[in-house]
Image (cartoon, rainbow, N blue to C red):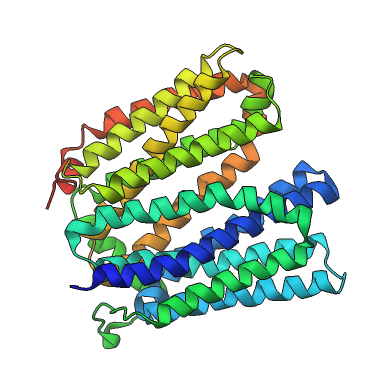
Length: 402
């Protein structure tokens, strides 16, 4: 692992192109659908198409990720996404593209992501020293944050300058760059006993059985899934909060989005630059509370408090980034590498389910109880989750510095 910095430098270069191009294309497609249909239902269905396959397939994808060569799995997943995007671009070039073609593309990209993301996260502990995993998670968070800030801006710019078919080709190029970068690094695989392969569900149960033996992991994951369930319905309501409660406009909506992204970037920078020695589970629990407070105080703000709302959104982004980096680090350190693919894929599936519930239910719940009350109640629930987490001593042991 002596040259791990060089390895990650190459990987991050490819991932930067891939994530940025995907962010550009995703936002451009949202704008295209908005301009063409003006339908909230179409946007909700497109989001569902982008989440549902990954959530369902992720339950079993990890078994194959742990069986297969992880570098080849990542290259195959990126190549599959590039091929599907290229097909859609050709349909646009030929003026044959329809709305359902976009749904299919988003679903197929989701299938590729079900294999790519867990394979990447499961490979990191084999590439870098354990005491550097927190910094790596922070830098990964920074990359995603930069792309999440720049992607929508560039997507909006490009959709006004060129046809959507050319924008789709950017995503093809980004995926190919990611594949090319992986060809230049050696990624070890955990030792596997092929004679012990029994079946998908049995191997999945074996991995979960191993995890259950690690004290504190089960409540750590359950609290994380529960917090996602609380956060996601509120996350989709930020634009409505800006428009209705603060009587904002499109510019102010973009300011709030940038504030969240900037907070995520700042939190990732803190984790990536500094080798933080604080107990990471304590940090996770504190971040639940901090996000909860940002929601709660946003909910009690008067209509004139827009810029305070922006600051609270920034603080929530910082907390969300630190929480995510710490959680991934603890999982990577505590769980054996040969089952990490299964664990990450199952966790991502469980975490995505609340996203879909939030998309479907958030609007109806907010209409029933009011936007402000939605923020207040969610904030209080997150604070409660954070405080309850401190009662599980077995969790706190997991986060102690190495």
